[in-house]
Length: 104
Image (cartoon, rainbow, N blue to C red):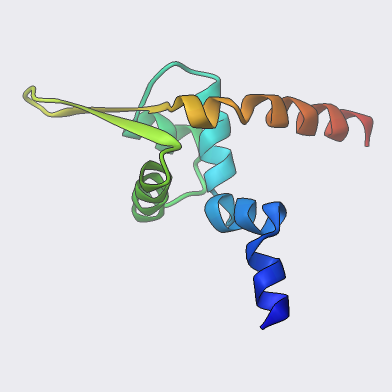
């Protein structure tokens, strides 16, 4: 029980619960380089991800208020994804990761 309490209070554990997995950080990384992206643009920028997995990951990111889904009532319907202010704060983390990777 004590180990579970420690796990829940650990910032790294909370981070991986919210952003863990193979795709979420990659999706955020793609969106940080663009103001807005349509679903197909995101899919094209990550060729290895299936459309179903991308849909599921975007829903999770939206649920966690890391991605905004903008819907436009047009024909055909238009949906755009962008980062929230909350997820934009991760951009400095990505910069640090990129610098670390360049050094190592």
